[in-house]
Amino acid sequence: MKILMTGAGGQIGSDLITALVAQGHSIVATDLKPRPSTPEVAWRGLDVVDGAAVDRIIAEEAPEVVYHLAAILSATGEKNPALAYAVNQTGTWNVLEACRTRGVRQLMFCSSIAVYGPGLPDPTPDDVGLRPTTMYGVTKAAGEMLCEYYRAKRGLDCRGVRFPGLISASLPGGGSTDYALFMYVDGVRVGSYQAFARPDTRVPLMYMPDGVRGLLELAAAPADKLTRAIYNIAGFSPRADEIAASVGRAVPGVTITYQPDPLRQGILDSWPRALDDTCARADWGWAPRYTLDQMTVDLVPKIRELLSGGAKLTH
Image 1 (tube, one colour):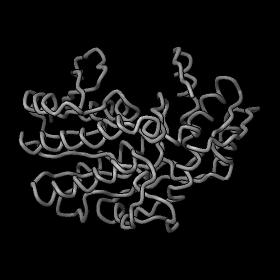
Image 2 (cartoon, one colour):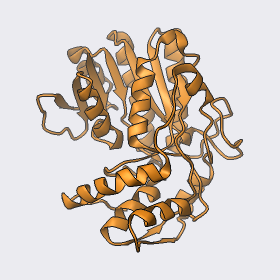
Image 3 (tube, helix red, strand yellow):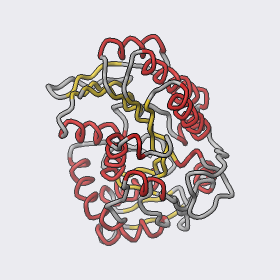
Image 4 (tube, rainbow, N blue to C red):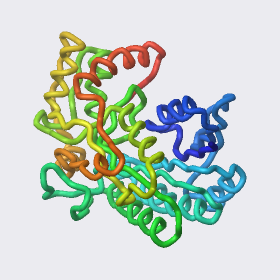
């Protein structure tokens, strides 16, 4: 199957490409800064804000499925809300329209817990009022609604997941849950880290292998089993100090301190503490495989390998 991916150079893209290549698919990976092509993956430059360019590349490549990953994340989006709106809102519209007019069979959409706002039930179900407090959340909520509209009114099989904060051995992209990843990175690199969140901060998180598997399983689910377009999927919901303790068990002697950043802490406090993913479990059999400690055991060696290769991760 031929698959086109937007925003393929971001955090999700590398792991998703690896998984799709392993399944035998032909991949066209697009990004503002494309990487060199390989026999398995053709890389092409694409700015999703350019509607004509989006339409042209989908017409030329004629993919059966599009994974729409291109986005400006929460913390970065608050620093530049106009860019976040352009990429996340206009870009999503452009991709949806090109998929509709060019006969793409399926569009996979990545949403986020950022669509929620303050005053949430714990755990937070799929169907609760969306009151996002960031431009990222506003545009992701609108993207969800566009997916539902195109599914119901335009005949496009649009499916998506609301991701928790995703953690992987890769460069972070300006999200508000980056404090969790940097506990591992700086814990390995220098033996200490000062988190920008309070120690009692609790938000949903997920290890990237589970996140990628969730996307692939939803893409493969029979359409007649699905009761909605967008699904919560849950992993684990540790406090920041519980993540620090897990890192400490894998990296003895690490020191984690806390100095909350008002902007990012405010965003974190507006998000769910835990997700209710009953619908995903019932409709397509979703279940996470990694706990916090299982992630730590798997992730720390990968962080060591990443850093040994000269990766430069900045806060």
